[in-house]
Length: 140
Image (cartoon, rainbow, N blue to C red; front, side, top):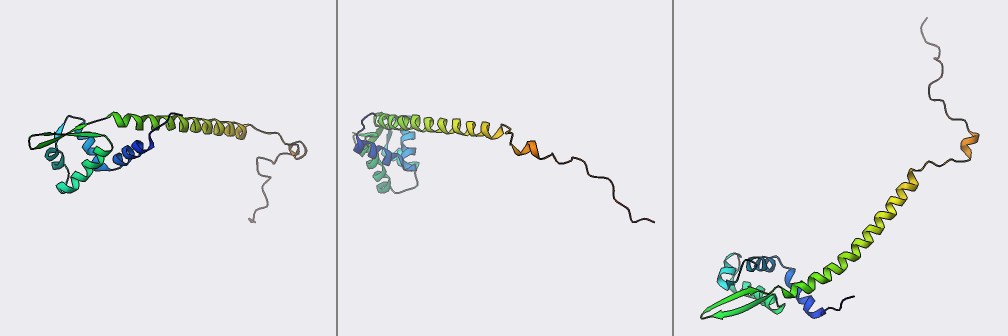
């Protein structure tokens, strides 16, 4: 198994767990933006939004740079690579487990569909398919 930096991986998954932060990353995927431009798309206070940016920055998912009085943010996608590798490892595991389950269920279905001949079918005659003769009527 590949060795992962658990602390960094925890920070990345924690950062990605929030919708607002995922939307910020999607917006930054289009190119670097100022904090003001990023915050406009979200209905929250600037201090509240800055907390989201701090989480993204701690996870290494964004880089901030200051140009005069304007703070710009840019996407840093490298930390997501390790998270993607971790997910891929377990995707292979679960695909293998689900494939094994599928084979098992297919085998069970094959066993259930095969007609089995029991010993009692040789002794007991089959039930008649048609009804017997008509009984007496109440007519006079």
